[in-house]
Length: 154
Image (cartoon, rainbow, N blue to C red; front, side):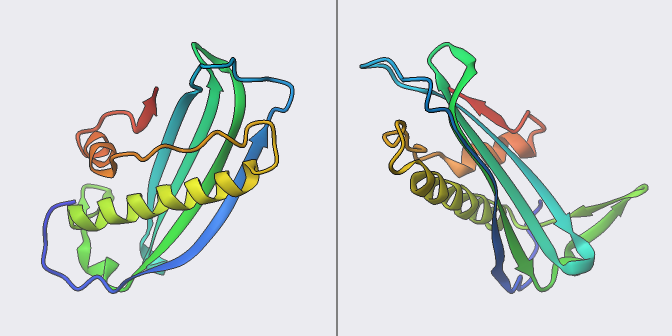
């Protein structure tokens, strides 16, 4: 994901809700904040000139990550018209060298899609107060870029 001057022709190609879960039997204790797990994946589809971001979040009882209150998973597909020009070979694998800022922007939009769909789905449930917080997409991107696990836990 190095900097390279190429007109990306970037657009959103699709948004897909891949899953939603709410556990109406569990209640968040009064005055407590839910724990949050977030995971993401980044999957270039070179032949289709698509980049797929899948973002998943799960709210759980504080200090009890196995007791999930609610969660969702959303995939955002981006059309990148010149994606093939950004591909390089490293042995048997192809690597996509997207500009960092483009990846951060795509990640930010994907997280916003998850936030919106979670808010809609949680409306009218016991857990309607759960809201995906504002996250720093640059920080998440740096975790991916430096090879850290792309999962954030609070």
